[in-house]
Image: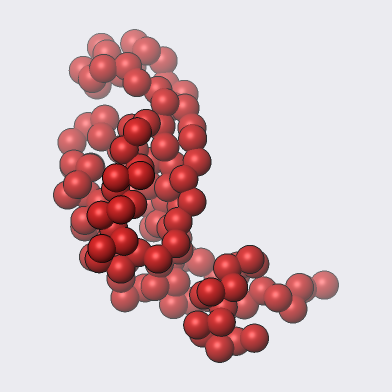
Length: 119
């Protein structure tokens, strides 16, 4: 049985960004200036062996990461992802990654749900 509090959010995307530990808070502050509204920061750890970082990728071994989850209106996604890429230099190896996923249903983000008027 489907929960009546879930709503279709076809006009929203989930941006998942993984950056080096200590960089998420500053990044979020800059993204809010261009329209980001909500986010969640979680801590994570890369699973690659130290050898992969240093010998294959040629970068310092820093497995601690921050994972940022952002629900963003479709119209703002490119602007936000481009800014993340610029600020975090995602085009360079070892600087992080960003993923954009379709967001079909969501529970618990009442601000977005009220904004859509789907209550």
